[in-house]
Every structure is written in C-alpha cells, then in structure tokens.
Image (cartoon, rainbow over all chains, first blue to last red; front, side):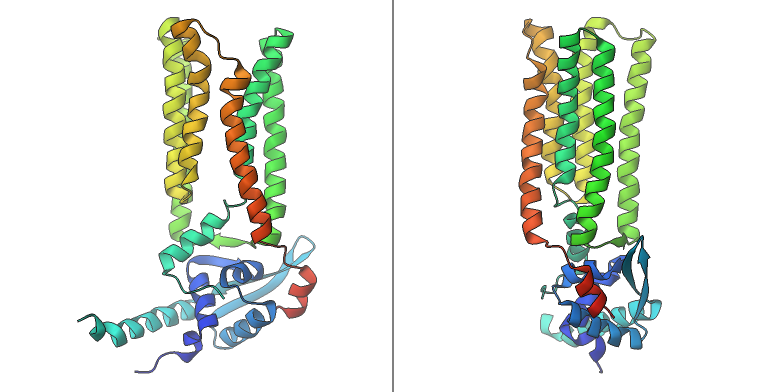
Amino acid sequence: MAVDRLIHEPARLAIMTNLFVVESANATYLLQQTGLTWGNLGSHLSKLEEARYVDVVKGYNGKQPQTTISLTPQGRNALEAYREHLLAALAPLSE
Amino acid sequence: MTGLTDLKTLEKRAFRRFYEDGIFDVFLGLMLGTMAVGALVQDWIASETAGVLSMFGMSVVLVVVLMTVRRRLLRSRLGEFKPGPRRKRRIINVRLALLGSVVVGLILFGLVAAGGVSLVSLEVLMPLVWFINAVVVFGAMAYLLDVPRFYLHGFLFGLAMPLMVLPDVLWNYRVPPWIALGGPAAVIVMIGLFKLTRFLREYPVRSITEATNASP
C-alpha cells in the first residue's frame, strides 16, 4: 500500500492539515501555524502546487502584496485518502 | 516546527489565536468603563442627556479604534484566513445569540414603556436581567468561539449593574458608579493588557520584504 510521499513529509503534512481546516489562508497565517521559515514554506508550497494539491494566488491587499493559499478539491481528497491509508495500515496495532 | 495535532484541535487553536491578542478584552472593559464615565458625567453636570451622549460618543470611538488596531495588529502577526464551514456556522450562531440578547432587551424596554412593569419591581428586575443576559451572551460566545475566558468576562460584565443598583434598592446604599462599573471594567482591561503583552512577545511581525523575497 503506497503512502502519498508528497503529503507524508512532516512540513507538507502540517501545511495540508492547516489548510484543510480553513477555506483559505495567507502565507503569514501558514507561517505562524506551522512554524516554518519563509524559505521552507515557499519550497514546500511549490511542490504541493505542482501536484495541484494547493492553489496559490498572488495579489494585493490594498498596497501590500498578499499570497492566498487554499487546498484544491484534489488536495482535500488526497489528504483524506492519506488519512485512510494510515488508519488502515495501523489498524492491526489496536487489536 | 509545530507538532502534528488532530484536525479539530488544530482548527480550534487557529481560531482561538485570533482572540489571544487581548484587544477584544480591553475593548470590553473600556466599554464598561464608558458607562462609568457616563454616570460620572451625569452626576457632575446633572444632565442625563450629557451622560448618555458622552457614553455614546466614547463607544463609537472605541469601536472604530478597536477595528483598526485589531486589523493592523492581527494581520501583520497572525496573518489572515477564511474560516471553514464548521467555524462559519459557529460565527453565525454567535451573531444570532447577540441578536437574541438585543431582542430580549427591546422587549423588556417595550414592557417598561407600556407600563407593564411597576417601577419598584423594575429596579430589581433590570439588574437581574442585565446579569442573566450578560452571562448567557458571553457564555454563548465562549462556547461557540472556543474562548473560555469569555465566561469570566460575562460574569464580570453582568455583575456591574446589580452591584450599582441592588444595594441602593435593597439597603439604601449607593455604590459609586466608578466602583460598581469601573471595578469589573478594570479587571477585564487588565486581563486584556496581560494577554496583549504576551501576544506581542509571542507573535512578532513578519517582514513584508522577507515575505516578498521568499514567498512562492
């Protein structure tokens, strides 16, 4: 049973789970929630965006640049599938 | 990096952080404080209108300042997010609870205006209604927004009116407004300031330049 290695990486899992519980968020929010550095966050978001798990929209909030990030439906499904895989893989331990 | 947490706790924690700045507590305390100031103005100038106007004016200024400061403070330190469906439902429920309390207040006001309640029983009834209303409304906010200290604020806020009115009605002893209203107000403001200083320390401003250079 293959675990989604893109989500399995702890930093990306933290990003995905934090995005899962909101409709969308900006980069500062993700930084505070995950404790990552800007560079780390940028790098992981690029990978998730490539896989179409997240949408990254750059715009402006007044005069300030703002990056809005959200999970795509594909990303939400991938995270739910990942969760089910893990639960199935670890289920025998509870017996 | 933040350790992994279950999704429910994650969502609660994310939302609760937006009330960790203490600004709302300071605002609440100052709103109660405006009532103390309004009562003092009324006593000094011997004019109920002056008291009400000063209270109204201060409240408007407070609301504007609160919204501006909170937006600037939170945006630069915590970022922004749009809540998910579960949280949106809870926010709607909070608004309904607040609306309900306004409706109750209006009904009671209507009863008084229509002469449906005698003056004596009104003097005892109104502080109790105030207390129950405050406890229920703030309790609902505490439960729905997952911010437990709002239960305490509800109790303190609710205590103010009974403390001012009931000793006078029952024992002919008038507690000065600056104690009855100012006391609970001061406690709530101090809680808010404590939370604010801690918040400023825990959540530094993220530099825009750093963000622009490193963002994806």
